[in-house]
Length: 131
Image (cartoon, rainbow, N blue to C red):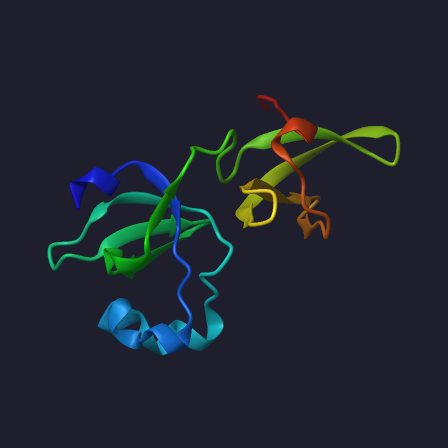
């Protein structure tokens, strides 16, 4: 499973696929977690064989059965970007990285002034900046 270390991927888990795919210590969180449509960063594996997937500021421990590697996203969680909103250049932070299945590519959710923006953004709509 080391082949998944330092990759980005999808984990399309639904309850029908079985709780056995989720680490026992995280099963109580299942109703509040949505795995579908998120792009996770895999930092490696746990001693008991679960992948360690990172999304925003949380780690998820899952069996590798459903993990599918996708191309590395252009931006990472917490990156600061500028973009056009209502004809103005504004600055926001990458909050989440999602997967658009129809377009087969990543999209980004942003925060601006500590508020999550409703629109999803494509990589070409954003430019990385240093603050």
